[in-house]
Amino acid sequence: MKKTYNLPCNIAQTLNIIGDRWTLLIAHEILVGNTTFSSIKNALEGISSNLLSERLKYLEESGLIESNLYSAHPPRYEYTLTDSGKDLEHVFNSMILWGEQHLEKCYKKLVHEKCGHEVEINYYCSHCDENVEDLRVLKIND
Image (cartoon, rainbow, N blue to C red; front, side, top):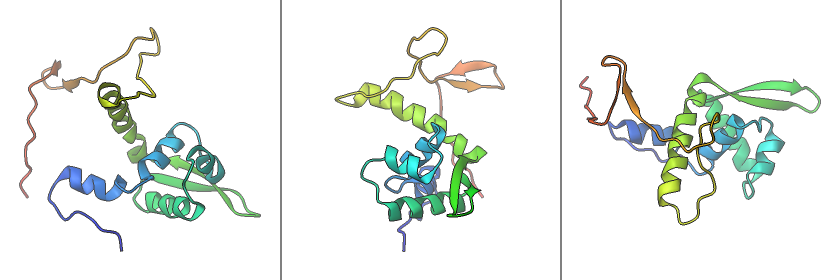
């Protein structure tokens, strides 16, 4: 049985869904266009077929991906991200930016497609119509 965090915390509950080894990498591969079992497996050196199959089923049960049968004999599926899964792109981009700042060796950088310069993440308040730096996390009471 999978161990989970039993904490009233968005981070802990999110990790219950995407915190297993390989899970985020599988979702990322689907995001970048590797949408079949074999293309995902080929892109993720070291993952076993059984574990990939297990993670794909779990991601589908969690509502992050959908599978579509594209070949009946033998059955083969193509995987796509749901809207919830697509929202993980922000998490991936944040991790790329964090890695630029903190990894000994950086493998990727996030750039503005139009001009090629590096970008940063800003928080925006739609009420005030401005970028903000003074953030606070509020606990939501039931």
